[in-house]
Length: 204
Image (cartoon, rainbow, N blue to C red):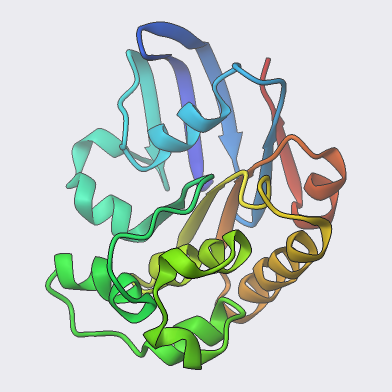
């Protein structure tokens, strides 16, 4: 089992959003669905310890996530947030950001951009000047630079038009095939959940 949640309760900004959740998330691709405010984004943050549960346990491959180094966990379980947030002047520096923090050798930026569905020539561009869809792919390349085993995706296409959404979905499907990644995807779109996921966890 990829993740197991046992009696998990959690709050967001002082407001309870998860109450006694017990659920399993298997290997492969799982869509987390449900109405706004039920704790979908909070759940993703619990899975790689960007937040800790108020009660209960979160296990990753059988081990309580609180037992290990949270930074090591986040390198193995990468999160791509809902809104792109470039952190460096160029695309290449943005993609190298995570490995640099982890003290790892600089990755092959061009190869990572190709994996994320971008032209390697974009490496010298200012990420802040790209379209939202292109920025989202840069965030994906930045996550892939740490060679994760799991990708957590928080509404990765919510700010995109239908054309860009379809392109990102094709990229995600291709990544699963090529890299054998497991994916946990938060989405409000039932059709997207059906297209991208093998399993579903509905909150609320």
